[in-house]
Image (cartoon, rainbow, N blue to C red; front, side, top):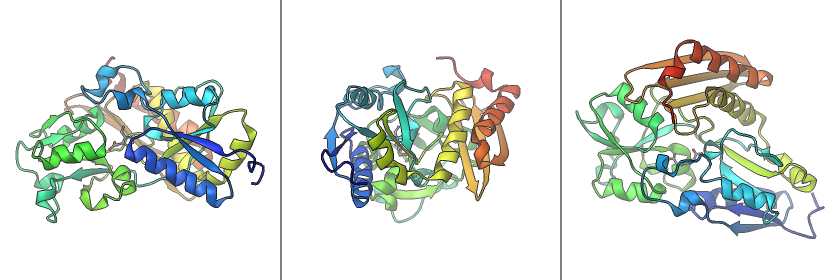
Length: 312
Ligand SMILES: NCc1[nH]cc(CCC(=O)O)c1CC(=O)O
């Protein structure tokens, strides 16, 4: 671990608070292992364009593309992504060198601060309550559980969304528990939604540490951060996503639970309004994560998932 003493590893990150927390977290772990790390702030298209629904920006990978370009241009040596924002399409010349231990995978129901500390659950929300989320996956599953709810879009980083909630724009919003925990905002979680009601996005709560595929010193420095269980789970989830070709904007959820050497994958695809859905759950050994993801996606397609995925 001392080969890097001459030159620090340049770790690229977006400027959002969550991205910077994630970058500092990984930099800290690498420094504990003896590496020198320098943080490089980069601006991405997803950050620059904070108004309008994210679907309107169009392309996948709005949060990750610029960091990948900086890697390929050798401006930085590694990038830390929220893996759920990383398109499943492989990028030539780059590798996900490490998948660290995963944070909480749940989606969280968040109520306005004025209502704290009384915890609000999905079942507690009054008839016709107004819930904010920009995600088709969250919207469809919310409506499947509570067709009476009024669901509308919300954008911006975690702080911006919480401010809109607290200003009275919504009765509740949904956020990834992982982001709230990382930002020290876990006291804002009113309810962790069970995965049977709200199956998370593929790889939610997981980080991807990416570097150039031929950069041996950086690959070696990142190796100790790898968590085999997290890698197996996200591999199964992302294989299913890729096979469904739903992309990050589809009403699709997937979650793999790791139990020793055993992997259990649950995946769901819903219609836009939540009135129709198909779901599948299956098991396999952790070494067969790719096969499990493929098998689950195939069964979803056999049950009509393709007709539910919105063409884009
Ligand atoms: N696309 C936004 C995004 N990307 C990653 C996270 C949270 C952290 C994670 O899921 O790993 C969030 C915010 C959210 O969904 O609430």
